[in-house]
Amino acid sequence: MKVSIKDLVDSVKDKLTFPKVAMRILRLFEEDDLSAYHLAKIVSLDPILAAYILKVSNSAFYNFPGKVKTLSDAITLIGFEEVKKIVIMISAKNAFKVSDEFDKILWEHSLAVAVGSSVVNERVKITEDGVAYISGLLHDIGKIVFKKSELTDYMEILKKSYEDGEDIRLLEEEKYGYNHADVGGYILQEWNFDQEIIDAVSFHHLNFSLKKTSDFLKKAALVNFSDFIVNNLLGIGKKYKIDDESIVLGLSSAKVIGFEEEHLSGLTDEIERKFEILASTMEEGV
Ligand SMILES: [Fe+2]
Ligand SMILES: [Fe+2]
Image (cartoon, rainbow, N blue to C red; front, side, top):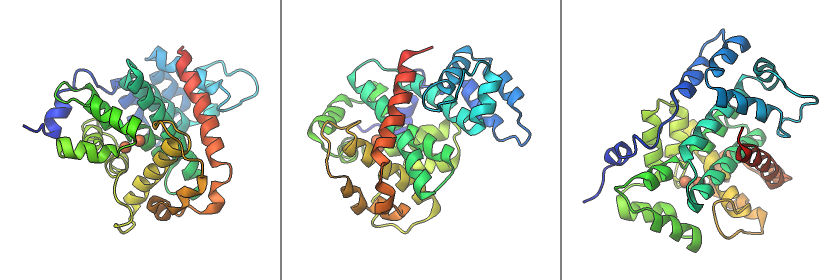
């Protein structure tokens, strides 16, 4: 018997949660009169989160001269939008909890797609930076659900897609009747994420050549495009890389987001450099 998406998501409820304090912080950003002081106060409730925000603020990612000493300084310097990204990044890292080789690949892949979506978005201007980054970071959260559940035997699929380069979406659909993008959208809905992020995640494996371009499809196409770059040009998530960068210009998702040859210059280097700084900052812990 096939497992429904609801049963699948229910089966990981105890193992996969999004921290309450993170959701509380995210809700804060909806307030018009949010101050750095107020934000620092709430963030301080979670000392690990606070320490990470300081650490990332002091990393080469921002390259500030001098040391950022207090949380309020960090928030003022990097800005609210960056704080939001770091809060989600820390929470996602906990959710992805690395216990084997594939968890590590999935976590690094997700972080790289977050950075990738943000860098690509800077060039093609599809959405806000935070939306691009968070959608990229969580785009494959459905794979974590599949992997953590006892109702599925997902390892085989992960291996086939990583080692033999088979299309994971098709393997999932054949076995379960739905794919990790469907599952990701479902769990983000349960976690009360913004609809635009849910849509970008739910549709990131759509066949973009068949669809008309609406606003939410552009965000999904942005994630799809960054996912391709990270997998195939950087080899973060896939075992084999492609050498020819210009291959991305022919993707249907590139057409949807208006990605042209001029946008390609320095792109993969920038994604790789930013990803490496973030990955090593997160790896060291606090
Ligand atoms: Fe995916
Ligand atoms: Fe992916």
